[in-house]
Length: 147
Image (cartoon, rainbow, N blue to C red):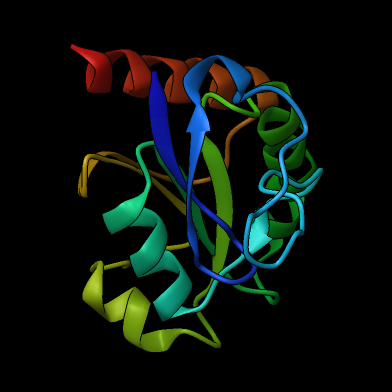
């Protein structure tokens, strides 16, 4: 079975075998990795492409560099993104740079985490979380998305 996976670098849509989502995959257009070791920082165009074209759920960390809780949670977010690679795409949106995205998604506090699947938001959680809590929350959201 094939699934659509959007490249976080060039926003091209790639068709990949679903059973290979955990493997090291490269984009057919730009040849960069489709999954990186770190969450990708996205602009509004990149986030829209991920949400609207990808069959893989997208976990978004809306954050800002001046936010203490955001910086505290960053290592946990990175760890969970590595542990769940292939099950979901983990991305970051800097709300200082992408203020229009923060407004569009009604982000009122940071950090705010949101999970998108099938082109729509399926879960949202404001506030910093530990890696354990984050893994549990994302897993529950993904389970909800698959039902």
